[in-house]
Image (cartoon, rainbow, N blue to C red; front, side):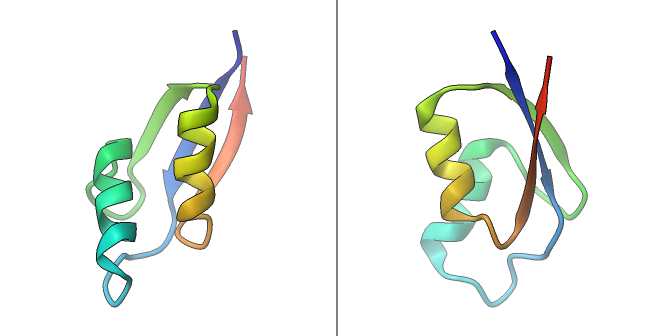
Length: 60
């Protein structure tokens, strides 16, 4: 199964509370944090919600 590498590229300061909560639930705590998650619709949707703060790459 494919995996997603999600990197926080911008700060969450000044963003909405639900965007901060989404970053936290993805496991991102600070700038340049990287997490690798399964390629599932739940994680894609969360990454799409904060797409202006993160970069998403597909990893095998």
